[in-house]
Length: 249
Ligand code: AMP
Figure (tube, rainbow, N blue to C red):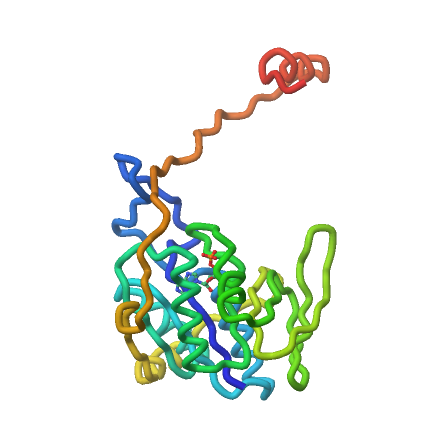
């Protein structure tokens, strides 16, 4: 079985986000970028399925600027066999990403597609669902366990109030939640080997997919600064402050 894994280049989750002075966007100047954490989990799951003999080939795909090849090379170092880079410098919204991935699914015919639950830069949580709608493939979102048996995937989903287990007929799409696995780190020899693994490049134009944005970014603002906390000397004082200062009671 072939597995297709989508990996997105995002701001490293340790970085404190800065906003551009004119509030037009997030400031990416000299900011450390990394693979989206949910995509790391997606790659790890694919690699584990290959190690268990369930998968035979892992194809990593990323849509983004030339620099997104760094994240594809990381996926190759972690165990992907080859990579597809759809090069674009534009801000590509989820629907366009899903359309591009749908075309890759059509060309590659994977048995399983694994994408992250959400990208931590835009927090959309919609690409996997849109891809399922466009391809007509069954989907299991926010998964914390995946078991492949014959032509089915039994997946456990993290839903409000508990866990839900569903069975999907392959080919299917799953989106990864945090508890699915703990991703490994790439080893130096594998990083070296990854440089020689195949990485094909294409563009949305070559693929015949219109990625014109349908959304307008109006502005970006940092969260309000939090005032420091204070200690109160009694419950009465606390209640008084909640009533008269915070006005929440
Ligand atoms: P989102 O719906 O934007 O929160 O993203 C969910 C998941 O879709 C990510 O974790 C990736 O697996 C995939 N994805 C979103 N954008 C891209 C991109 N530009 N390139 C590759 N995969 C992407």
